[in-house]
Structures are given as C-alpha cells and as structure tokens.
Image 1 (spheres, rainbow over the protein chains, first blue to last red):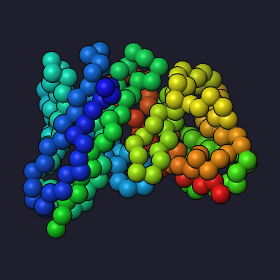
Image 2 (cartoon, rainbow over the protein chains, first blue to last red; image 1 turned 45 degrees about the horizontal axis):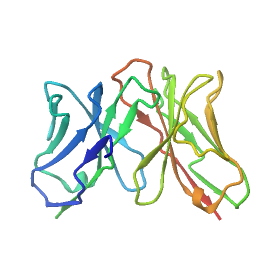
Image 3 (cartoon, rainbow over the protein chains, first blue to last red; image 1 turned 90 degrees about the vertical axis):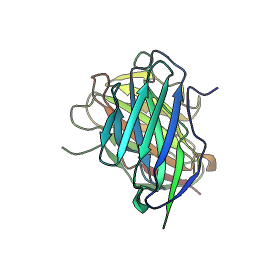
Image 4 (cartoon, one colour; image 1 turned 90 degrees about the horizontal axis):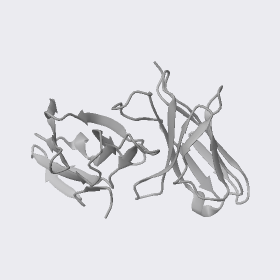
Length: 111
Length: 114
C-alpha cells in the first residue's frame, strides 16, 4: 500500500460542476498537508496548504481529518482552466524525505 | 524574490555523455529536493540535500547519478554516461528550514538522450 493514495481518476466534468478529490495517508505522524496542481509538462504549483480547521480559497476548499487520515479538496463552479492533475502532498517531517507525493488525480473540465 | 531557478530548461545529450543540471533555491531556503518525472508518470523522489550535506538519497539510482549542494553556488544533479532511459523532466524544489512550509518548484530541466 502506498503511503499517500488518491482517487485514481480521471475526472471528466462539465464547466460549472462541483468536484471533490480524496486523499488518504498512512503515516499518522504526518505533520502538514498540501494540495498542488500540475499542468501538462509543467512544474507542480502549490494550490493551498491544508489546515486542521479546514480552509477555503475562493472556489477551493480543503479539509483535513486527522483521525481518519484523510484530506479532501473541493472545487466549486469548475472552470476550463482548472483542468490539471491535482497532487496530494504530505510532510512527514521526521524522516529524511519529508514530503511524500500522492500519484495525482487528473481533472478535465469540459465545455 | 526570485523563485527556484533551474537551468538549462532543455538539455540534449548523446548516450554516454554527462548531464549536469543546476538548481538555485529560493532566497532563504536551505533545503533542496530533486525529483524525476517520466512522461505520463508521477513525480519520483530522488534526493534531499541541505548545504554541504546529503540528507536522503534513497531515490537515487546507485550508479551514474550524484548530487551535491555546496556551501556556495547551486545544487547540481549529475548524470554520468547517460542512457535513453534517463530522458525525463527533472524538477528541483526548495523549502525553508521551518517545518510546515511547502515546497516551491523550479520549472524543470527536460533531458533528452539521443
């Protein structure tokens, strides 16, 4: 079992739809959590950090459930420009390689 | 505040040559990470360095690959005697020493081995 797992995808949704991505992690000592997006042939870019109380940034909402070791990302009113691969990233912070990347979930927003 | 700088953006090497990839972290960042990404695949961790120290190289192939982050200058990922299978995008990322800080990525070096 991988340390960080994500919905396999791909997700194909129409413009304006709401879409949710799920991520689970196995290391209960994990300290911090992030969502990145990666466009084709580009570098990953930080979308948002995920805080214990949940946080929102415009159309994006991130939730963390430490007890269930589960992270989610909700995108409301999806735009064509949201099409990308979304990466769940966990920082263990107590090993040599602090950051563990999930395999990513691909989203295509269709006109 | 300049971001993570990688160069070159594109690098073409013939089989058997050496490839040197450079990464300058963001100002104030002392931790550098190298990742490799093959087409249509996910990011694969290679190595994590701090100034003058390799902290974790568990993702580095045992042969032909090496990395350094000297006291002065950029981090270097070196691939000796390249083979076609080394063709990939190599991304560098940096983070500050504080925990709970995210990674910031450079725009990568695309290596093509002919």
